[in-house]
Image 1 (spheres, rainbow, N blue to C red):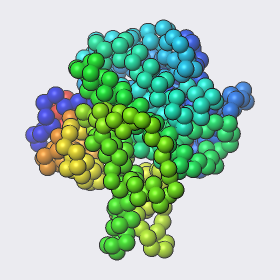
Image 2 (image 1 turned 30 degrees about the vertical axis):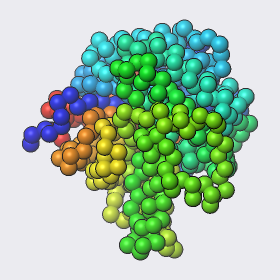
Image 3 (image 1 turned 120 degrees about the horizontal axis):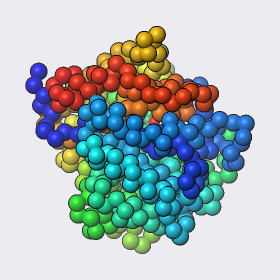
Image 4 (image 1 turned 180 degrees about the vertical axis):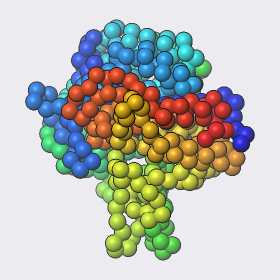
Length: 479
Ligand code: BG6
């Protein structure tokens, strides 16, 4: 089959500093929000503690030691043929407390080394400025994004890294999955509004008022840094990043259709309407009114949002869900959000509904709406892997998932969608954001690291490593 993926299409993988790097308190790095989350499982939520307790395990502290192994890891992804690597910068490695006067040189130097290594392998970095983390001090002192003051701290941090890496990085994303700031676990990781909270992550209760106010501050911050980047560094390409959960109506009852539209607006369109079009959507006003949300909008905020429109749209895509208004509508699992069950779809072991056709639907819907280049910057399946006697991992399930999603992208390209890149989530096994587990593996590269913190961190190529290598080498034809 011929490829039909455009020449220069970016193939790669995506990671986040807090789930990958480890070295949480090395070379001047300050503690970050996720360093206060213990490990959990599918059925046991991660706990948040105000102080780091010596008898508890905090899996993000060690990650999978990318901090010390980045050269080996980058050589491996280069061997797979990656042309793009999505990674995030740990804010607290650069500004350990977030409101410091001066950046931490050792932290800046680390990312210099990583970017240089990527460039040496002809891999384009795609850098997320904030991926589910912020210096914990900003939580303690300001209650995270609930405070307007974070806008200024974030700007300072972004300006520092823009200036430092201006010749090494072209593609930037402001906030990872900004839209999950409205939901459950996402609200904690995305907005850091967990000041003083201690207990299971599922038990925190934050008002919609607070979540949307925090998000408003993030939209303003995003707008300001995007506008600044466009003005100062015209070579930069600035993107948003949304968690796209496609929702289908459970039945053709118009009430279900209406409820699905409302959910799609709230979950998927609200944030990107703001970041791509540069304004709050018209439907937001009624939603705010009916939910008692009164945003405090500062002078100039809406102009900042209007000036900070992104150049390309990126999103994560793992699953779809259903929305229904009838009794008995069953729920399905997800990490940051929950959806409704769809009897036509299979699920991963963690209950995420696998829907490659939904990716094609999503790509078409998004492109119809915004008409700017798109990237799928997260997609993948978490699964338990077994190391066999011959030191191999025969992850046929992951290969099947990958191929079906590549096929869906190919069809979307045929439909006319301007899709420019695909970065698989967690090409190297890393700590799960939702559960803190290691056994929930996404990688093409196995890491010998386990839920109890044991393991050598040795890397092993899985069968999917070679499958993805072939897909990339054929520019998507083989898959
Ligand atoms: C996305 C996040 O929501 O999903 C990642 O951006 C996360 O940080 C990924 O790791 C997979 O979710 P999980 O909970 O399985 O790690």
